[in-house]
Image (cartoon, rainbow, N blue to C red; front, side, top):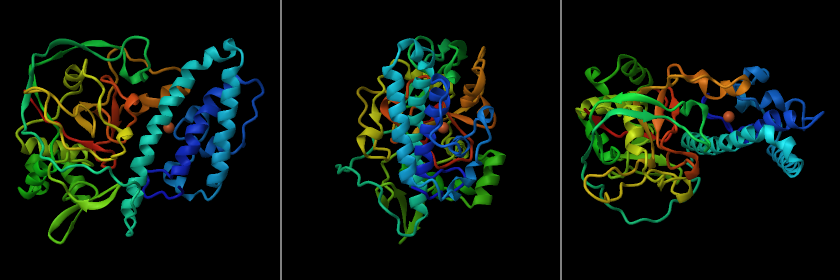
Length: 388
Ligand SMILES: [Fe+2]
């Protein structure tokens, strides 16, 4: 709970404290007159990146905190839970102005639940003992269905969130955009397909790579997805169920945007634009391999319900898109601290869609825009191909 294995990751205890910090800072301190914080130092210690409400402790230093202890953090969580319950049980007109922040706080905590799994996986993978976080459910091995394409007409389409249901600010406003006719792969790229790219010298062929990408790959010595390692002439991977041989039929996971791009170029294809992905996903049920399955690893694609049809759209792995993460036409960041939640990362990051095996199922939707820098490999991210 206290280990921080790299600057991008945080100790589990920090995540637990930070999700609570959100409710204390953005709900209780604003809703309760003369509110007295549980501990005066926690405000700065567990602020992630909200400069409008204080001076956050830099993320790379989160692992240096030997105090407060896990027990103290859990006591804080309980106290804030109790104070939230008291607030919610009180006068409705006292609660009403804060309902939006409470709802945001709940979705925020779900995001951190996924980050906990990402960060634990990274920390455990660094440990020579290779600990097991959770055993995976027993399953019959099966083959991935053959690769196929689904055609879409394109045209003048609408994307983005509209309506009363919750969505993050970055999902709106709903707007028109032009999409050329395109095809999407019926399923995610498998380990077997990615291995063919590796064996064809994919990591050493600059003509397949973005210039920035090959620089990073060379500097970092990438020759396989994160968590893969060669042993006894075989590729293995570290999973939350411990190390095991790479299974050819499972979707490839823990690749960066640069790797996804290079693979797509090698395959004579490209990554989907986020508008294409959303048009294709709109109307599909949000079903798939989410955190609730307990598998915590992407699963082999199911046979398609009809041919050709998209599978694995939601769950399994976040799908890298060709689209930079930028504001939609007409987007204005919310006033105050919540303007910092999503808007200030609209630079040098790329959009991912669909959720993954570590995402709570009711957290994602067709309009959901996740984002990471193009060199990040610790998210559960993979590849779906597209073509014109
Ligand atoms: Fe956060």
